[in-house]
Amino acid sequence: MSSGKTSCYNRYSGGAAVAAAATANIPSSPSTPPADSTKGSSTYKQHRRTPSSSSTLTYSPRDDDDGMPPIGTPRRSDSAISVRSLHSESNMSLRSTFSLHEEEEDTEPQVFAEQPSVKLCCQLCCNVFKDPVITTCGVNKCPVDAAKLTVVVNNIAVAEQIGELFIHCKYGCRATVAGKPGAYEVDPLGCPFTIKLSTRKEHEASCDYRPVRCPNNPSCPPLLTMNLEAHLKECEHIKCPHSKYGCTFIGNQDTYETHLEVCKFEGLKEFLQQTDDRFHEMQLTLAQKDQDIAFLRSMLGKLSEKLDQLEKNLELKFGKIQLNMGILGSYDPQQIFKCKGTFVGHQGPVWCLCVYSTGDLLFSGSSDKTIKVWDTCTTYKCQKTLEGHDGIVLALCIQGNKLYSGSADCTIIVWDIQTLQKVNTIRAHDNPVCTLVSSHNMLFSGSLKAIKVWDIVGTELKLKKELTGLNHWVRALVASQNHLYSGSYQTIKIWDIRSLECVHVLQTSGGSVYSIAVTNHHIVCGTYENLIHVWDIESKEQVRTLTGHVGTVYALAVISTPDQTKVFSASYDRSLRVWSMDNMICTQTLLRHQGSVTALAVSRGRLFSGAVDSTVKVWTC
Image (cartoon, rainbow, N blue to C red; front, side, top):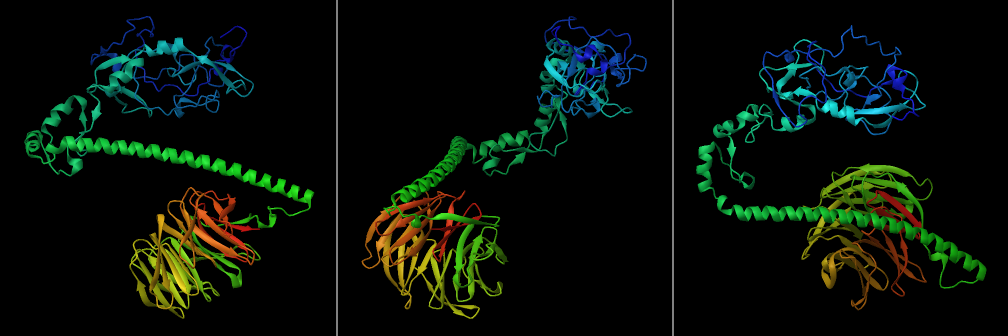
């Protein structure tokens, strides 16, 4: 320490505050000389103790007659040494300023072969320093003189001296029968070696007295390392090395060798090993891909924020241009959809939405197995939470004053909208109910390779017919005045709604059909592979494929006015897109959700969107 800095240890002995000291049991031998860093060789060396040595005793490193004053008593000291716990953070505050060695977390046995020099012991806790440092006082509080301890530098010289001290191997120590907790003494039945403190880990890692468990069976009694080899020769719990592939052999060394000669897996071991290696490589590749996906999602989130800001800036700029020019150009601010609010309350992703226009109620189904009822006109709050399903709520549909909900629990529940009470539960399918739609007093439910048609009779559902010939999950159903449209794998089937017969099949590309919308002039579908296909509703010929999304198109919705028709698409890529069906171009991209957008609903010119971020957002012009 430079002469320009005054150490608190040169003013008060209490200034040598300790955050933690080594838990040390030092042998009681008044005649034993103090440890000296220059004594003996500096190379790693083991000293075998003799059973009659006085080092089998233990004692506290300070006696009442050593002149050590109470902690609060000032005393001059030439020492400028403090100590840090191995578990403390390097925040230069030495934990919260001060702690006694009773708070020390390290309780590893430590019995010295010789009594350490008093210069290597803390004056407060009386134990040998652990991780010694040189400190100077700051301006806050020290436990003795109201100053804060600040570390200047590690005390390498003292650390080296401590490292040269000889201790007994921890496998040659035992807790004292009578004494304070954490005190240890030499165990005459344990490891007989003494080793340098700095090299204890090397020795103890390979010590013959180290306790180990039988690798064949944890139920075998504990062993010492020196006895493990002999035990393994007699162990009756040796498993076949191919047990992970299904071999059930368990036996001793003799039967083990005989078994390997006839084990059916032994001849395949090279193939099995290659398979394991390949599987491991695939796991590593998968982990890397997961990291890449996480990174891309993070980048997409940042890009979404930038686009959001650009969108706001463009709105301001175009607004100013329009005010200055006083004319309407191609940009019409009345056609720009903006997020007007967010409904928050679900505890899981929102998968379906449905609007009851008469009462301005919005229903949302979620992975939390509930349906929430939102007021979209006056209070804009959740009116009630409907509970009844045992699985994710995947589909919602309204007919008259009844709400129908389909779930992964394979049931359809009927709810009375006036009372918001459950009035019936129907076991509808053998698989999750993916989608629901109603028309002509009938309810249509889609599941795996099947569509069921139900007659609605009051609160009852009477199975009328099951539509078959479907090649995959039916995730999308739309009903018009005369037709039912269903989507499955790369196929849209058009059914006559009265005869319930298939009258046309549209072949698509891009994987499974996840969403369908029907306008006055077009049939539109969204697919697994990010595409939106458009057909002419009269000729049934495909007229366009809309691109732009970079994720599955989960939902489609339509808003039509006498002047124009807009189709809204919701995607896994967290965005909504607005498409003008007059020229088949995307006129706006809506970015507000923090997760995949999975559901859409429209009412009175408003658009509602539900997403994996557990929220429902409201959009208006």
